[in-house]
Image (cartoon, rainbow, N blue to C red; front, side):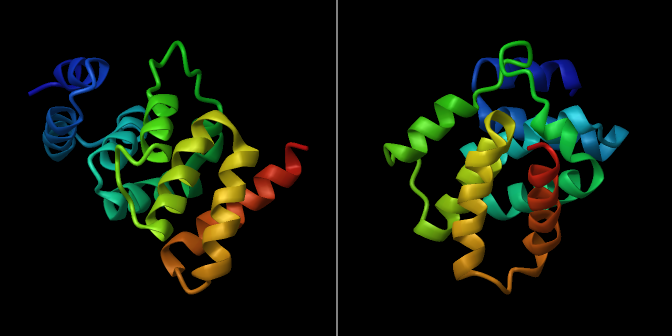
Length: 146
């Protein structure tokens, strides 16, 4: 299986097949930031929030600008669609998971809105050590871009 096939599945919004194919590509060839960015979206869309969070935190720590500088149109980013589906409960998450999913997705579109979701989440879940470092990076980056 190839990255091109995974990207094709991603473009037609077949997230299950896309994630399976991306994972296969990664296991054979390693990963790139571009693949990881799409995998995060696929994980969220398929309700695999823990996998999404783990990959998201690594990518934030590595290169937050890669996420925040997403060209929604050129990269065919489906975040707006997925955000709408979550808001309309077409994709159901428990309240805390919903804040995580929305924070992750919004970072592609609007850093300030993303940070609001992470602020809300962290107020109730201060002991999430996995997210804490990424959250601090997001806050610092947000303050530096104002």
